[in-house]
Image 1 (tube, rainbow, N blue to C red):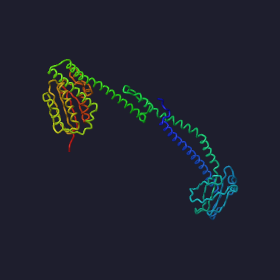
Image 2: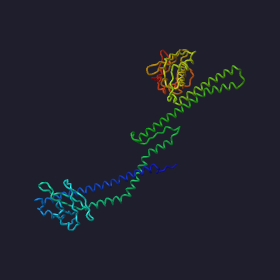
Image 3: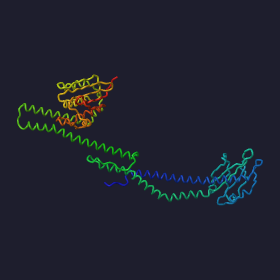
Image 4: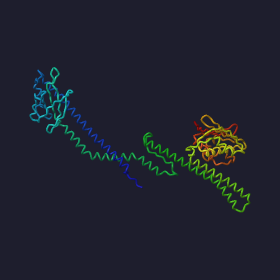
Length: 465
């Protein structure tokens, strides 16, 4: 299937990026205009403050009146004519009566007199006079008592402000289509670039199957950023999947092999019976064989079902059972005529499925008997403060160090057992480990003294107030 260059996600991200970049571009223009205005106004205010102080120095205050002492100071061209940068001066008293008016105002529109209240040390404002924008500065002249006696108003035209603003706006208006095109192209590129790892993940996921789980993500990414963590998480997931599928495949192969043994025996025995008429004793012997092999197959299937569910029933179980009662009713009677000695403390309450735990004890005791010959097997259950300790000890052939590390794996059988032709299918101890772990306990195996093996189980107690 042909991949679309512009998927909905890419379009959505590209549009979002375009809007964000366009917004930033507009903000940049606004910021530029603000800076330009600030610079022009600061420059204008600096000139006006300098000029108004120069003008004020031409006057003195006598008897609360303003007296022009140096008239030549007011004859500057900018105060006399409409020059490139003219200055418009008006001096008036507190009542608004004009004391002095610059000569160039004869050629200019009237400028409204202002009476500001605050000076720090000047007061500035913008005025619209005709078609011109003026920047106005105000200052006060004070007497010896620091009381104001008149106002100085000096104005200057923003001669280049409007021009600069118009040029900036015109430039941006002309550049806008190209800028927009660049923004859109860049947004699409970034959107597609950012989703490249996702496309690699999709491509890899499409390649993976039950027979091909060795593929891994290889794109470049920092370990601590989102894409890097996603890469690590997915690669870890693929490794777990590969391990699980391999384990399931191995489990299926071994399960098939283990089930074939009793099924083959059943099939052979049925063929033997059906070949000709048999007497009652021969039929009875054959039925016993069939019963034995059927029980063996049922045991294998039941064990595999428990293992396949990872003993979920134990973990979720709300059942509480008393261990000594379980041993006396369901376990010890099975070994009345065998060399098994039980020593069980009472009032040991555990959480879990009692039927599963019965299988645990039977598996451990059966193993101990198989590997002990005619020697005694000791089963001890001891109640401690916070836990129950269960020991199953035999005096048989023992377990090698190499086998101890793998003995709880599914379908694994120790070298000693296989070498001596002892029957088994390698699921019993795996089931024991699964059930004990799900009950919150732990199991380990040690060498017994002087010979044999010792299985030790520790399980948490249930306490009642």
